View 1 (cartoon, helix red, strand yellow):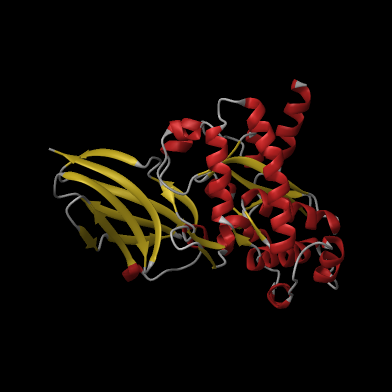
View 2: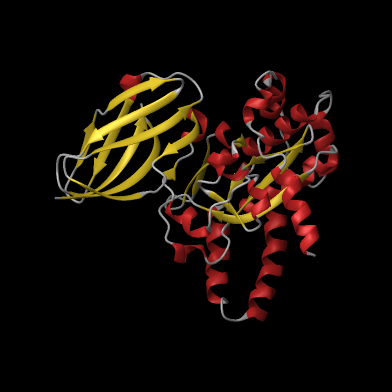
Length: 335
C-alpha cells in the first residue's frame, strides 16, 4: 500500500509546474462564446448535452474550457443547501450512524437539485465537472479538503469543508475550482450572483495552496506541501489575487507583531503590468479606517510594497489594486 501511495505522489508532483500560462497561446473566444450561449432547462440528459456543448472543438483544452465556463456560468451556488448540510452534520457529529444516514440522504437531494434545477454546492460543482469531462474523454478528479475564504484557526480545520478538481491536459495535471469561479452567494438575501473569476481556472499550485488544502497532499501538485498549521497561518488571499499575481512572495504569515516606526515589506510576482498609483493599503481597527498610499516599486515583474508603521495599535491591513481587494494581514504594533 505504501508503494502505491508513493507512486501516486511521484506521479502527481512530476506534473506540478502546471499553470494557466501553459495555454496562453490558445484563443478561447469560440469556446467562451459557445459556453455563454448554450442553454438547458436541466441536466437529465447529461451525456447528450455534453456532446453537443463540445461538438467541433478538437483539443482537450478547448473542450475543457467550454465545459468549465458553461458550469460556472449556469450552475448556481445554493447556500441554503450548504447551510442545511452543515446544521445536520454538526447535529450528528457524535452519532456516526445518523451521520451516515444523513450523508446518504443529502447526496440524493444534492444531485436531484443539481440535475433538475442547476443549483448545488461545491460537491455538486466538482462532480458535474468530473462527469462532463469523462463524457469527452478528459481525466478529471474530485479533490476534497479545506477551503479558506476568511480568517481561520487551526481548530476550524477538523473536518473538510470544500471540494474542487484536478484535470489532466496534455499529460499534465491542473487545478481548478468551479465553485469559487462561478460567483458570490448572499446568504442574508437568499440570492446568488454570477460573477465569473478566471483566476480559478488552471490556477498556479503555489497560489492555490493559500486557500485550498487537500486531504491527500499529492493533489496539491506541489513538491513541498505546508503543514495544516502552516496553511491556517498563511495570509488571506482573495479571488482577485489569482487574476493579478502569479506568486505571493512575502510575508509568509498573516499575523505579525512589530515595533513602531518599523518598515514592513510586501512582495508579489505580477502576471502583467499594473498602475502603481492604484496600489493602496487600507488600515482597519476598532475605531476607524484609513486609506494609505504606500511606497511601491516594480522590478522584473516583482511588486514591492513598503510601509512604515508610525502608530501603535492592532490593525487589519488590506492590500488593494484599484477597487479589488487582494490580500489581508493582521498587525500588532508595539513600542
